[in-house]
Every structure is written in structure tokens, then in C-alpha cells.
Image (tube, rainbow, N blue to C red; front, side, top):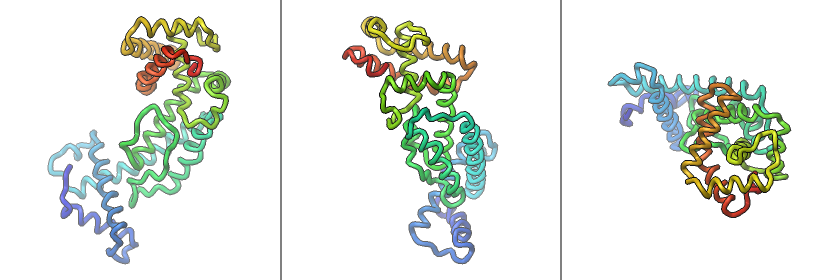
Length: 277
């Protein structure tokens, strides 16, 4: 939906009145720019409401689009907070400070200060904890909601393992894993990929020289895309067996397997698999 500034001015004027508590419509340039971004953000939110018949109709006015988008921002904020509390119930940072700080300290501050009316486009948090999905194109509640969704999926995967198993994998990867700014789920998923490639039961936690030889042989005899696809199929079967029919979790983890397979291939060729597994 494209609108001219003439169509947006009445909305901005009303928003400016509310911003100044109806005392004035004269605001600094920086504030006007902030409120303009707020209006545009809500209009973009309206575009995402694909199931709303008004959004799909032709001739939707800027005021209508803004109202739909503003309501969508409010609803997404409530949904994000509900998902946050749901995830928090079984949340475990496994001793990783970056994950703990982002989820248990940063997000409550976001919900405390997030302004759905005047600054819905602001994310406010740096969200330093890396995910298995790129959220760089998102801001505001869109990014926060997606971030919580990703953590929710990662926690579901990690909670399927005993806590001691996860911490053991992290410790073998790096004894200082508590201070790592790396994705905990990816480290565990990499180890799972190693087990699948080596044909090694998960009950046998320690990789030995013969395991590394089998993995190296896989990469020597099979092309990278084929191994990636094999791992995606194997991980999908693993999720189905131990987590039930979780399409979202399978899709989320599968998105990281191409990078994981590439790293394992390089490690196999350089003889440094023990640094990953």
C-alpha cells in the first residue's frame, strides 16, 4: 500500500496531538520523523494481516490501514508477551550468560518500556544472542516476537535432552561455554549431526578416532548438497520420533544444517573434527 504525505498528514497530526497531550501540534523535527516512522510501521503491519478482508480490498484509505496496523501491533505485543511467559516456564540457559541476559533480563525490559503508539518501530534491545534464523530485516515487535519464537523452538529442542547431556556437549565444545556468544542449540545440533553421520548412538557421548574416520569418509565419497539433504532427512526423522509432528521445529533446525554440514566438511578435511564434536 502506497500513500502520499498528504494522506498521512491527518494521521500524523492526530498522533502529534496525543504525543503532546493535546497541548500543541508543534513538535521538533526529530519527533515528527519518529511519529512518521510509527505510522509507516503500522501501515506495513496492516499489509501483513493477510486474513483481514479490508487489507485485501482495493481503495483502503491510509487512516484505515493505520488503524488496522496499530491494532495488529497491540495484538502482536500481547501474543509475544504470552509466548514469552510460556517459554519462560521451562527456560534453561544451560549456564550461557548471553542467552540468559537476552531472554531473562533484556526481554522484560523491552515489554516494560515498549511504546506501541508512538514508537512501535523501535526494537530497543541489541539482542546479542545469535539465532539460527536471520532477523536483521525486522524491527519493533516483529523482531521481538520472532526472537521469542526462535528461542521457544530452541528450548523445545534442547529440553528434549537431559540437562546434563546438553551441558556435557557444551563443555566438550568449549570449557568456557558460559561466556560464549554462540547459539547453544547449534552446538548441540552439530553434535547430533556428527552422531548421525558416524552412525553413532546418542548414548555413546564421546567421539573416538573411528567415528572421525567414518565422518571423513562420508565427505570424501559424497557431495556436500547430498550430505546436507541426508542430514535434513535424518533430523526430520529424529524430531518426528522424539518430539512428535513438529513442522516448525523441523524447519527451524533444517535451516541451520547447510552451515553445519559445511563446517563439518572443513573440519573433516583439516583433521579438526574434535574441535566441533
